[in-house]
Length: 179
Length: 179
Image 1: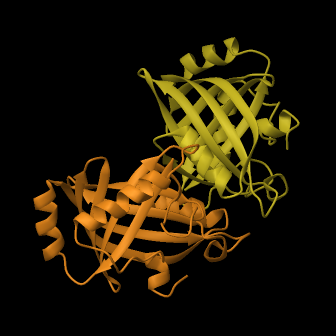
Image 2: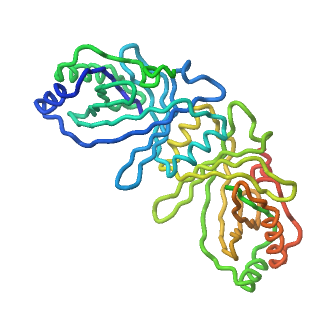
Image 3: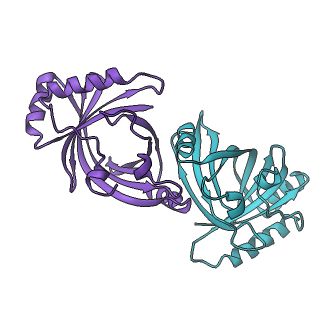
């Protein structure tokens, strides 16, 4: 799967929330996300622009745990990249497997995310610990699909939200100075 | 967790099944297991005696999928080693994540397993495709525990089953000539 994604830095969420209501976006959930990023023993993911992550999301008294691989960004304007995700049953054991095969935990990212659905895009309002406030808009594309239309659509949606600057291609890791 | 394990080649399961009934072992399940073993990009697991595996077990119309790391064997008589397991939601996506981070599928092992419980040991009768019939007995130990008593107990159980030879420390992969 290709994750077509653009991120923008904002100073506050109030104006964005008003616009989201105006355009009829539907609030579909809130998540507290705790991420651990791993680096590889045989190549530097900071150089290859890849990512391997274990994400924990507390929910319903338990938690959802997701292992995600992200490939290098595919264009010069968006954060579009290959993304593969599986749910796993135990984050400590998953981290231990990665550690044993040579991967080391490189950084943690923690954020509160409010998620809206608008047409077939997900719009996330991210309050990222130690980094700031961001609006992310993402759509899915198939691996053999041209994703340029999806990128254009995402920028159209940003316009509707009154966001025309502050676009940020660096990851939260890079913004934290880790990568 | 440490998996304390001994395996023995047998010519048939009939005598073993009789003995299992005699000693009061309880049959707790049957599984069809389809395993894919992966090798690492930065070290050869055949040399380091490690293993990374995705196992699929069809059950209840769906399937259980387990990612397992096994460390090098810890003694000279048994197959005792560190073992870490997590359930994952999708075997193709898990294989794709491993492929993207540089691991390659090296071999497949397929077997039918009948599992018995005796005291706190699991006794498995394994019919392994292209390899043969084996009885495996395993117990769990903690990482800081001396596992020698567990190994002795396992050999005692083999005696009760009438098995005093055919012990095999090579993995099914090695027996298939892959490793």
